[in-house]
Length: 190
Ligand SMILES: CC(C)(COP(=O)(O)OP(=O)(O)OC[C@H]1O[C@@H](n2cnc3c(N)ncnc32)[C@H](O)[C@@H]1OP(=O)(O)O)[C@@H](O)C(=O)NCCC(=O)NCCS
Image (cartoon, rainbow, N blue to C red; front, side, top):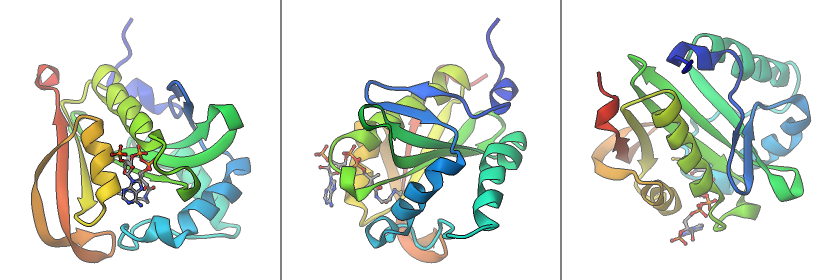
């Protein structure tokens, strides 16, 4: 029998692509994850919106939240992105902000060491597939700072289209020109 929307929020769904595994974060991943997220190149277009921490008890709190509370409350799926061939954590991707079990928002952060190799696009395509085929969402969207050219490219390669620019909109903790992109599957509207 086909799973329903609510059934997917028991554990972080395990997803696979040709080169990547998308799975739950565990404590062994944290050192690499924190190195990625603290990198100024990664922070450049986030407007201070991604929480930075590097010590206990914040680490355990964060893990408990992403794998527990935020999942059980159907707030967000936070996946650790692992590169199969190196068994290495190379990024994070989220699908959250669910509205009426039908709309959601995607965001992602990858290690600069692995930029430009198509990994973000591969992960976004798989999460988009999961959103449409499994969760049966009708719309997925993403907000991107207008200067973040690589991220705009990722989303367009994954099938998203630009819907407009929100002038000096709240992005993270700051105000920036922000591009709204989305991909829609009308058949999933009921
Ligand atoms: C945006 C991001 C996820 C892209 O990751 P990635 O794995 O390099 O993405 P892909 O390789 O799938 O595609 C990136 C595209 O941008 C291009 N690109 C990569 N780095 C670039 C750079 N520094 N300047 C310009 N273009 C760049 C790539 O060549 C590629 O375009 P192409 O297919 O036309 O060659 C990554 O840069 C990142 O983690 N940035 C910091 C966090 C962030 O901004 N997240 C998005 C928030 S909305």
